[in-house]
Length: 132
Image (cartoon, rainbow, N blue to C red):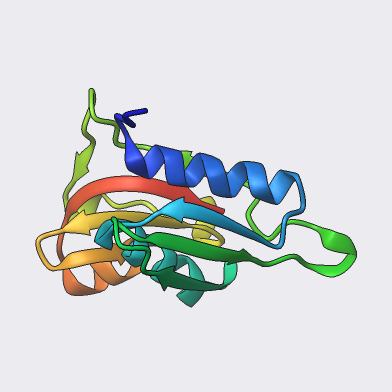
């Protein structure tokens, strides 16, 4: 089955696995998805991730993180820019998510980065998703 939006598929798999209280979730791999997982780990939304080679495109295994009492660390995970409607912003127009409690992940000319990094480097780009 062909997937039209692989990033939305990744976010949906993570969202569904977190609601079902799974410890990990497997996602078809790509460089963009690995970068998204790296940012989610750096910001403390997931425990870890691992890229497994399988002779095809590879598998990205994401280990989910939970708080006390199995509460989710990811409460809100939303795809902003979609294949049918891209959403670009300038660095001065980047707004914090939940007053800094969440992050926006952007694809910029300098790579994939969070909104905080983009404001610091004064670079804009395409907002891929928001996480809180």
